[in-house]
Amino acid sequence: MNHRTDDLRISQAQPLITPWILQEELPLANAQADAIAAARRTIEAILAGEDDRLLAIAGPCSVHDPAALLDYARELKALCEPLSDAVFPVLRVYFEKPRTVIGWKGLINDPDLDDSFRINKGLHLARKVLLDVAALGLPAASEFLDNTFGQYYADLVSFGAIGARTVESQIHRELASGLSMPVGFKNGTNGQVDVAIDAIRSAGHSHWFPSLTKEGTPAVLKSTGNPHCYLILRGGKDSGPNYHPEAVQASAEALAHQGLPASLIVDCSHGNSEKDPARQAQIIASLCQQMEQGQTAIRGVMLESHLVGGNQPMAAREQLTYGQSITDACLSLAETAPLLGMLAASVRLGR
Image (tube, rainbow, N blue to C red; front, side, top):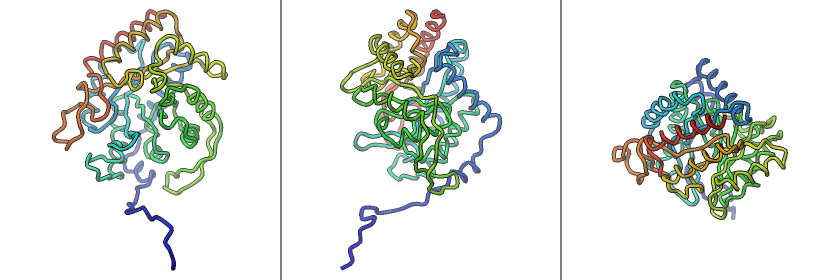
């Protein structure tokens, strides 16, 4: 008997658009490319301590409604204009959601919120969203989860992130070594900081890794190494929150011990807030106090924030509350505004 041994658990296959075709359909204008390149340089300067402003990455936990995201972006931009001497805003634009077991995997994977997994549509939407954000004049931050999707839109991203679930993944460290923007590595889900520091060190080196070319051909790519990688503190299941002064100082010293810049971004949600969005205000208050007392390692913050606070169960799009998260609960923009003002005041006082 001849037994089939291949693809026994694959029930369906769909063609995937190539990055080159998507970029041809939705091209990046020269002026927007210049602005993205400038934003990347500014973020690098802030995280290197050469620019004394604070990086503030704010936005929804994930994008499920592009129109609501753009409304949020317009309001965030206007809100931050009076703070521009002290705070450099970057919009959180996350298209992929890592899942502990199962759940909605984000706009790229399931743009219609109905388990139809129209990924080509999701890639079009993702690129269009980032183009619209660039047209507003806001830099964008996004997490790279799938190691091929970045080829479709990474040219539009000013700050990349590798999440807590993938920080120990060799392929994600190799991917980060070839990304064209500064990248933040989150500490592990249990709170371990050393795995993120190892990832920073690894991503600084050249690697060969499998991916796609812009033409959609499977290829092995060689990176040159990314010298602009940083540590993001997000708390953990075992360590608990790690935004308090002792944890910040210990992380700064651990970076310095490895010959890396003592430069930190503090994620005010996830393990640090223990999934309670209201606690983000307490974290900001602590960080402001630390900066005012001379802690120079805090170079950036992350806030989960949307037009409407809290979150809601996923449902048909027409049944959803406009501007409210369908993944992690967020602060409302009205609640976020005073926190950004506090951060700006602390930066100015710290000078």
